[in-house]
Image 1 (tube, rainbow, N blue to C red):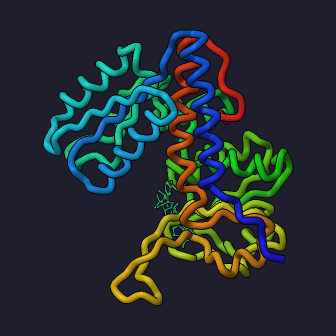
Image 2: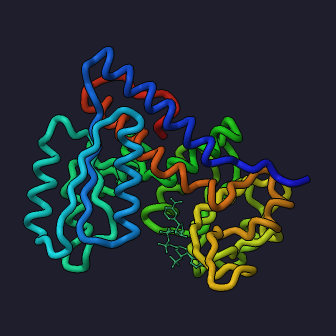
Length: 299
Ligand code: NDP
């Protein structure tokens, strides 16, 4: 039987709806409007599109959006001074510095200069450590989105076998920590893993975050498993010459025949990332004001 398709667009819309409701309550009951500051250094076209979309989505849920566009040759000193200013601005509850940064800037230093409470990307070393030790933290947006979809599909994740393929700091590792926190038995696979197909086949949940187009095929998937495809890969279109298409790290057509549920690409994990950025911002706002956190929007 073909799998249930987990509709990320629809799910992201429901997350944004919950965020908007909570923002409206914060305004009405507490006179607070959550604010997200996004810093873009340079003119990378893909980053410029992301920043524009983030700003638009922020305003749509009723929050304030503060965009800071700096020249590509901005010095580290100037960038750190801006972050310091945002750290101390009470109207700003979340700060995101769009990556990648131009080569002359030290990404680690810049990320770790954001106060952890406003680090809505969840990349600050304190948040990484808090998540790694199972404590309350700001959680990276993409894995948070995957977790929300998994919880929604399974209810409890306790005791399920999960294989995360990929060990990056922004997806694979935080994903594994989140699943562990929800009491899954977690295996992290990577480029040196032996018998990776067998590992995946024995899993109840497979999260693919590899960056290799359609690497994980249907014969890697156990009957009825849940497949979350984080990959976004642009490949030449097989039928339309000169055109491209987006595919995931999972070979959808074969995996959909084996899985119990699967996210498509596009329209699966992708839309959840910005929705979770908004969720993190409202969470950060509530925490900084000592208010109750929105239900279902955090790890
Ligand atoms: P990275 O390149 O940082 O990490 C890829 C991981 O995959 C590495 O750990 C690597 O292993 C592993 N890997 C590579 N080749 C193989 C292989 N043949 N077998 C097993 N493991 C392998 O990628 P990211 O984590 O940043 O991103 C992964 C994918 O997710 C990309 O397609 C990216 O575009 C997408 N993405 C999507 C987002 C969204 O919003 N939906 C957000 C972020 C990323 P090793 O460590 O050994 O090299």
